[in-house]
Image (cartoon, rainbow, N blue to C red; front, top):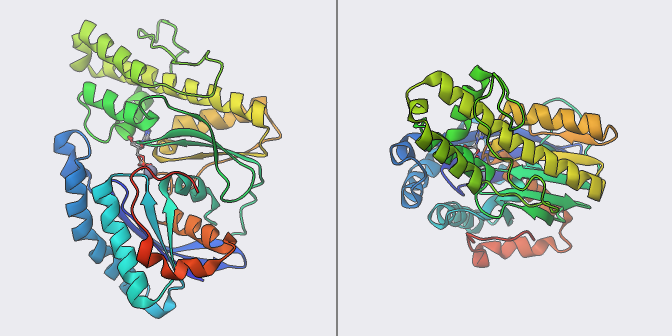
Length: 360
Ligand code: KG4
Ligand code: ZN
């Protein structure tokens, strides 16, 4: 089976071809066109500009993926598209393109949830390797620019949110702190690079290596929710009270390291708390912030130390950030596990982009 996927939920235009082989999913090709240069001068994503760029890039990427893999419409068995959540002008370009293709080629079409897609990035098989052994129940920590959620899955396509951010998402906090420090957009990779130059910090204590002690919001709260907007404000006040940070790379690297560590401490603490409560066999990390090397490493170590029987799974390089291979993978599971696959043959008639799409 060959699945063609389209992802346009935010500022990346992505298409992918994924195939099934002996029950595993393999990426034949995955293309991403980033709009960073278009949005960077504004310090964040401008929703209307995303649509203009997707409209320009999507036909070009589709042509390229068909040409360079020497395939035609008859080779495609299923089309999968991000239906939401995301920016509505951006989602509309992808969903309408997918609906038009499904109608004209007479192919089944599945609309899928972007956040769930980040979980399913972990189900993409490695080239030439056997199927990944991911056992249920799963506890997933999805950390992206728009979401920070802890999700329990007892089986495929069964999502229960057990914790979430009450304000900013983790990636959003990285982006806003980078903006405060004048590091540019997107902030995550920039802060991570600055923090790496400084080294890691102690947990919110002032020491000789760490002059900035930032809070670990909600770490003591007796629930699985997060809050990152106060942490961002703490950085803002630190910079306001010490303006030399903005001119001194050594100081801003130190502040970045402390900020990154504060986010990681909270994410790791709440994930372990959730794991103790829900006793998953596998803990999965996903979303753009899962590209953060310190988070990948520290969460892995914490699980190994505290819950040695629990498996830890992160997306392979290239599938942490937004991509269409994860949308193809999720689309495959949604289609394959549906009681009545026939409904997908007429999806092109009624499927609508939904900026606030919930899990289904
Ligand atoms: O999943 P994603 O590509 O898009 C959304 O669905 O939002 O995530 C993008 C987010 C941005 O906020 C970006 O700053 C953050 O992921 N990010 C990182 C890193 N790379 C990207 N955050 C921390 N460390 C990174 N290395
Ligand atoms: Zn995403």
